[in-house]
Image (cartoon, rainbow, N blue to C red; front, top):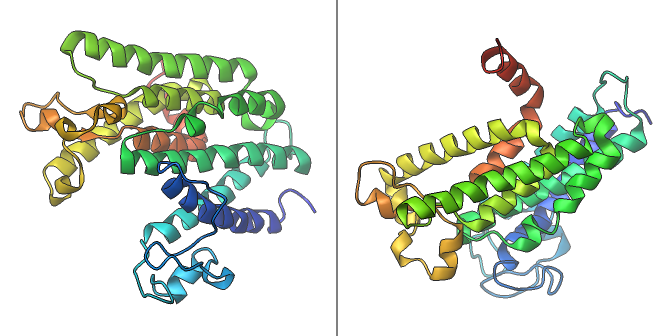
Length: 303
């Protein structure tokens, strides 16, 4: 079956939806220190196992109207949204890597390997973003331990991904190193933590997969989108959903971005997680890289 056959993006979509369901388990259980394997999926209220036909990605939530079939407790709309996001991104990266390039039409085997590596990368980004959003913590198991996968992907898949081993290693070192310098530099100047150590580790992971050429966009886009989110949230009713940085436990303070550069004393203690915006920017680069590179060449790198 040729790499451009319609079957493959459809398969990628369905496979992504299935693993999106597992991501919901990871997002809930990993911060709580629970096993992601046992027990199986169950209702958080009545503790009854969820039957297989009630656990079909996206569709089951719609048919059950977002409620447990037994106790009628509502299930968060986040569950089908995570499944749909993983499904769409899985199909998107398949279409990207299966497209003809300067070397011609990629081989099916090479495309499958490349897609598999970046499928894992996308899943990690989604899990990290939502865990950080919920807890202001980024687990090392999701951000540090997978970094070698980015270098291996560059070694095996550079003809398709366009990221060489040198690009990957430089991306890891420069990406993580830049945020590490910013973190300690900000603390040295202000005496306050402005960014957590989890963020520089996440940037190291992103740099390993996307290479150093993506770093300028990642730094600018994540900072801009994070600032917009912080300002809009602070001056809206959503503010009550975001914890005050002064009330955070010390261990949570290691992964917090504090927006205190705006002339408002209250805003100086307003904290938002920065990890979701790094992850969002990485997904934007992964999806729209050709167009973003063209814009950079035209408006930033042009003589």
